[in-house]
Image (cartoon, rainbow, N blue to C red; front, side, top):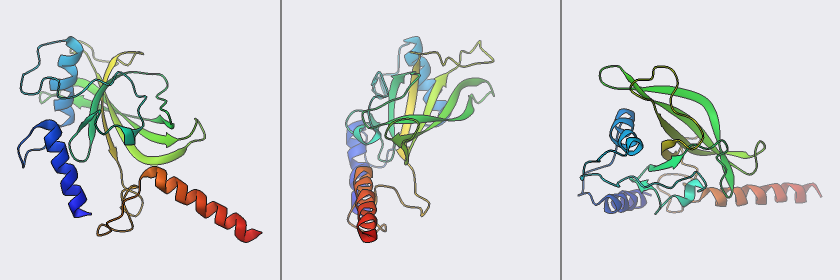
Amino acid sequence: MRDIKEKEEEDGRKMLKLPPGFRFSPTDQELVLHFLHPKKQQAAVSPLYAHLVPDLKSHHHDPWDLHGKALWNGTQYFYFSRMMNNRITENGYWKDLDMEEPVFTEAGEIIGIKKSLTFYIGQAPTGQETNWVMQEYHLMSFHQSVNPTQEHGSLVLSRVHEGKTSHGQSICSGANEDSETELSYMDEMFLLQDDDLDDISSRD
């Protein structure tokens, strides 16, 4: 398991073209101020990180399909997209948790809003909750003091990662950290379906 994590971190560095020891780990403030705001204003971005975060245009990608499309830092995916009323993907949808947090500058000025979402497999509203989590960043105008720009089609920046289960494990990891076998979420779904079939068969 440790070798797999080290390989993922190495892959992340290669995608970012960073030397060993460096990680793309921006704060909420840095994401809004140095990435979302210049992108929204079509301002000149520093050549050090120009085009670093890709623009996927929409949320139509399942979270496990983001690798190779979004920016990967070894543990999280980053990408720009557009605000949508229904964040539906091929195999599920992102559900808004109605949790909003303001993003502040060092001077205490609100520059954006961070919304939290969880990914569900299946069709709304009866999908099955997964451990995939998204923080969606919305820009707030420096001259605006009430609502961020959350209208349909407005630019947003997303940070996506796979959370932990109630047992402290990643949903795609095996029984323990030393296990060399990793299960994707879809594998977990198939195993659960097999268990259900076994239960039905045992009743017969």
